[in-house]
Image (cartoon, rainbow, N blue to C red):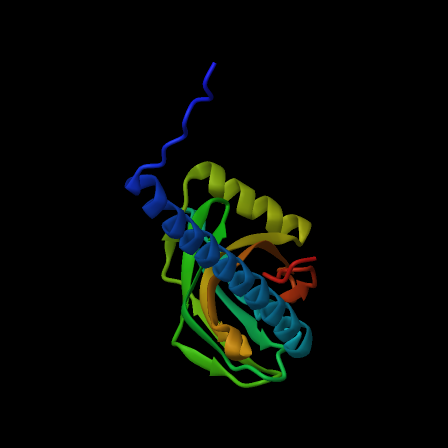
Length: 202
């Protein structure tokens, strides 16, 4: 029995160079990605970037009063620090906005202008927060009155600040620094009971 002849068409012969070109291009791209990853990793080790963050550093309950009709008046001073621990990169903080609540009632809004924080530096925002007279529901007024009698008033502070910073030649990073914590005070003398309130990871 005669052996079968093998034929290769011109289309098949033309395909082989194209396949080789595709393989070469994929190899080059793979090598480029690996080199880019190595460069990024080395750059990270050299720069050792630290994530900027915001924290409540101090506070004081300047004034709190509630009358028989359940009308609340307060004034609170809150010191929030924007911290940039990077020795080789500036950081910018913008759209900073925080709400201060008492018994689920927003009593004040804290807003700060955009700010640039230098290398390995910090900027303090000293918020003096007076509120307009706030009418409370009977249950809210009872909670505030009970807190005054126990010499313990608790506020909720929630909000964020948009941060942008550049990691050397690796590019810029943008993210939100979020605060969600409680601020505790002794209303008899207005002192702040220190507790952790920071966007920095534990």
